[in-house]
Every structure is written in structure tokens, then in C-alpha cells.
Length: 119
Image (cartoon, rainbow, N blue to C red; front, top):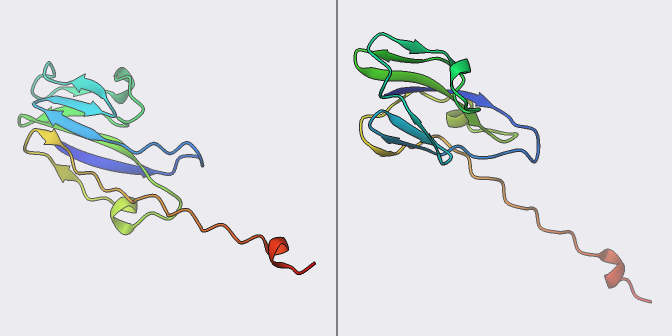
């Protein structure tokens, strides 16, 4: 399976990380399974025929391998690995290691200066 990644920045508050797992010709994206085993050699399934916000291009079977493109969400300042992800070749079943930036740490709250003023 060959996966290209298409980075995108969701609106603030709408960020949902993408998780992907492969089992044979089935791909599970954030808990929703898509079985591409019926796709014959040389065939292409348009993205519009797949009910998924994560699959953004056609799914094709070329030389026995599936080729597809997934949306890769990122935050406001993505790392190079997330902003310009390399294609992924998946050769085994199991979780797929997608590039991911951990969310930024919450800033420390500023002290309430009014509490520190003498009366």
C-alpha cells in the first residue's frame, strides 16, 4: 500500500488527529473501516465514491498495490515532517506511523497581580 499525505490546517477548535491501521486491503481511519479488496488490478475508485473526509484522491490498484492519498491535519506551526510529509509505503498489517506534531503545551496562567498589591 502506498499512501501520499495531503497536509491541511483545520479551523481552530476543529483539530482531530488522524489514526490509520491496515489489515490486508482494508484501511481503518479514525475507527472507520474501508475495505478495498474488491478493487481489481488496474482499476481506480474516485474519491467521490468513498464516504470519507480523510481520503482525498482516487484509490487505485497498480501492480497489486493500493495507491491513495489521505488528508493529514496539522496545527498552526507544523514541523517539516508534517508540512511536507514523505509518501509512506505500508508493507505490514497494523497501525500506520503517520507524521504528527504533539499539541503545544498550555501556557502557564499569569499570576493575578491584584492579589499581590498591598492594601
